[in-house]
Image (spheres, rainbow, N blue to C red):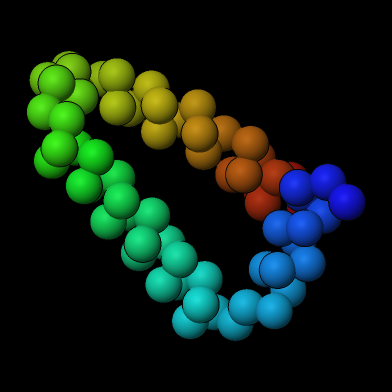
Length: 66
């Protein structure tokens, strides 16, 4: 079993509260990394915007395309 099949099996057991809490924990982990490693916050704002657009491109195109 590959990792994606395993992840799909696990996510099917979750309800919307579990998924929301997972998102919150990922956001908290990202803020913790930013707090512990200050140089990451010294980037210009447009680098964050580029990462945001690149990361959201596939999910948004899939959601809008169907």
